[in-house]
Length: 129
Image: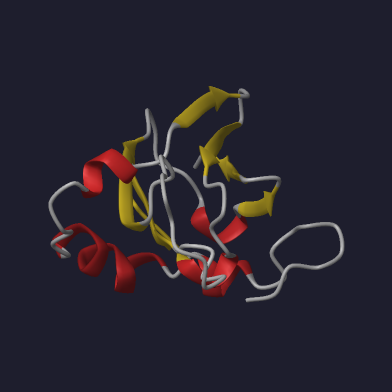
């Protein structure tokens, strides 16, 4: 799963492996406090498609998973620390696994969906079926 120079997902099929991952993501038990790490989202209706904007600052593409089944969309991932070797004296930055489930108002065509990751935002364009 590589991002091209424009920030689009080169192989969306790999990013949105629909039915195989959705059950794993939904059934996965996250540690206590993981809800506090759930990213904030904004869902927009553009008529023929939905646009979902997910705040994921500090999350690399290889640490993100997206799955869609019916009207359920799951974004899961892992926010890592800086790992620069310095002792942290004080931190308000969330780290660890997170998961966010969004119920869409209508089913979407995951095969023609697209995604962009940049500036701490994951933007999903989800055409309606």
